[in-house]
Length: 292
Image 1 (tube, helix red, strand yellow):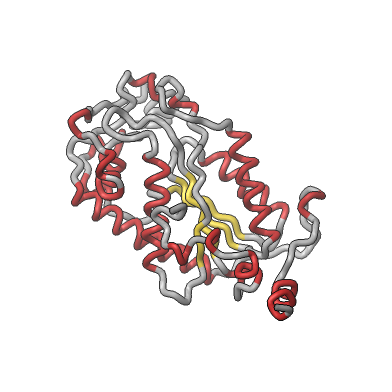
Image 2 (cartoon, rainbow, N blue to C red):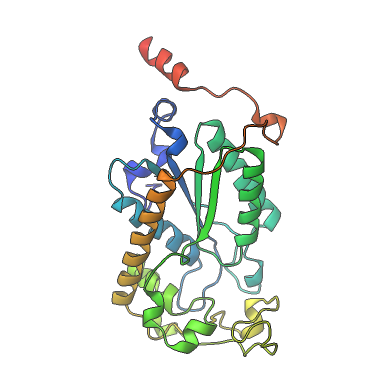
């Protein structure tokens, strides 16, 4: 089914339009969008890693929520801005502009339906900028909308407790944490017999970065495997622990977003004319249901 890792009762598209129109407290209902990518992740992992991890973590987080916390996921964005991996077959990429406008139009659709809290959980490190730009523009258009983008691993979790110092400092792609998580979420897709370790050279401008490269890069710059890190020590048990810690933190974050009060602007929104039309609301839905 379409919901994948998301609990069916927390998957917004499984509701009818009348269900959505009559939801209680839509302004404080959190809509969660997992954002991923389809791109190479070395010879041992599938190209779907970022999409699987974002959706899997969101699904496990939503499953932990108490029933009285209103939150729903919408279908994940599985294509991302992955041009740094274009040398490798299997990578499917959008431009940054296409991704930005996709987020804007999804956000506008949510706003028209009455939702005011939009949370993006991003699984791909190559695309925070267009997601952040879209979040800022939605906020400029709508002064009563809360839009948050955060990367999957940028909440408290235990991943680094399993890593050595070099992995913590230098890993960026298809390394220990992603491999362990995939062992927990989609073990049949992991081929550890093909796993290799590979790191970039130390960045030769230590004033700016003593570890990871700060200059723009493509993954092929660091060798033909596509790996930037060491997946070899990863285990399923580590993956389960990392998933548990991420799900716990994201469940707490979703709860906090539901409860949060943020500053609002009352002046007319900045936006485009096509977003100003009528959308059927609670009264329309009630009238339709009463007429049966």
